[in-house]
Length: 142
Image 1 (tube, rainbow, N blue to C red):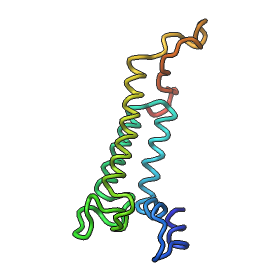
Image 2: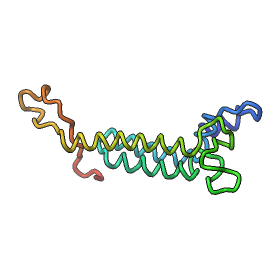
Image 3: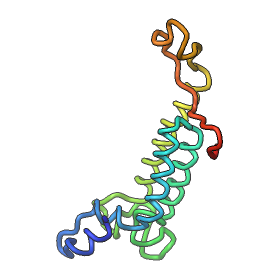
Image 4: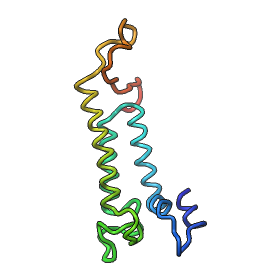
């Protein structure tokens, strides 16, 4: 969608850098974001943090969110999208994904070391403020 919006409505004189950043590598970014969201919904924080790390690596080398790879002669690690210094650089995208991975890591540690101690059918379950375990369904890919 962002690629269509950018190609149809983007202007050379006044490009929308948000849609441009989201249109670059959009299929790969979408797959990674879906994996992060699914792991978050299932409370599988370690896997969500892993996918955030993968997204950070791809964003850092310019596979997603950038017009060119970082290793091309015209592009630098701190240059913005499309070479514009005012837009978001690969480094900034990478740090954003690493920050999300850090938050997922914190939730994983909280889930591991401060879990709920009572079962849902036990009295006082609502007063137990521990963190819920990952959702596990029989027959699903774990």
